[in-house]
Length: 522
Image (tube, rainbow, N blue to C red; front, side):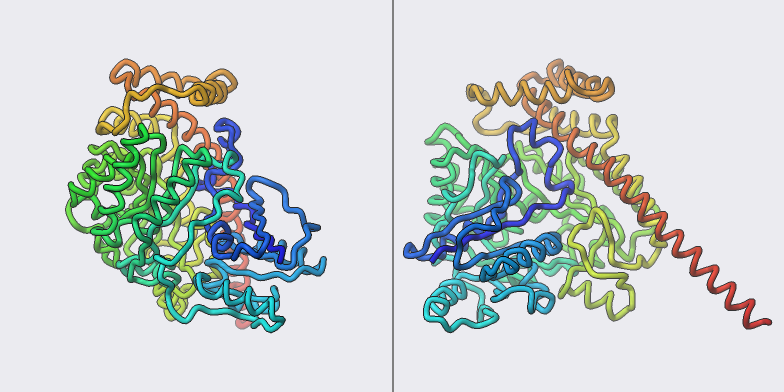
């Protein structure tokens, strides 16, 4: 059979870095791992092709017996458009992925077969059923699959050179119980892991295909610390033996800062960035959201501890908890500046379907719509200690302050100058990296506005003066700021429209109330 697997285009956000991809010579930051994984689960008797709309156009006339579509809630509109167009042309369409797993009821009738939850067992079963002519309309995993039986994803079917980084996965699931998190809904609270040889085979394959950066997409890489350390030792040995050809990024919980052996292993394995869901500097908000793992020790000291090992912390931050009043915006900014966190993905609280937070908000009558999966543009929750307008206005001011030129320069320079040593420092710069440097300087100095050119030269100059070995960091942050700042400006205009809409509705409601009172009096 001919099977065509499609990943929809990502809507622009802070995550996508769309505005700097031309400077990097890429079309997408990294691929969605779902479709290479499904392709790996497909037997050799089938012909499989992948299409990622982020790096290529969709051919709706492609010859295929089955077309598969995946995506998160944020992809919902485009997923449905893609499915509808393929079905209009007579293709047999199947849908799976996180959105299908969280909201299967919304997809009934929009595809020929629906996959709920992980597909390690249900996809091969469906292919057998389809070949026999007797398939089901919905396949749902009876239990969480054993990842030690998972084959290597088909990275070779991706256009690897069009991505900034490749993605692999070591574990699924997280042991914590954060109220707002949909990860534990989809993958469970018991971390399930692949074996070390499995992951090393994936790293070897990414290296063979030319990748220089790998993102381990685990939602909490250290959910099982013992096994994570085993893997890190293997990566460290491989990296040293190969001259540190790749650097690694992942996601982890903040308690990584309390384990110095783990931090040393991350450094030895050449992990240069970790995304951490810090969420809030306010302990009452952390307690409320059951994010108690972040309440061990001082937050600023914990972040700086990680920095000492040469690892950048990218933060996930949230405003809009029940214990957040209007002073939270200044408190968030002050924390991010003090902790020297260059990149903070700061958004508004979102009640994702099936989460404990969604259930509580529904019970309290505080949901104002369905989740769109994008915390940067919308909150579907009525705040408790401030108005909706105050939330949106405060958030708009916060992100503007975060990516203000001077604020970003200050905390980024302090991070660069206080960052601990990384393994592989001083390795000869490759030819393609010189070309990348040229493109970045072109876009942040030569072809940039005077303000941006000043920012870049100031950041580079201060780095050269105080620690020239960190110049590459300064160049990287110069282009990162360009992407974040330009998207912030776009988001500012969007939030301004949202605020005006809320204000106009409030005025209309107030007018209706006054008219009603006048009529009643008459």
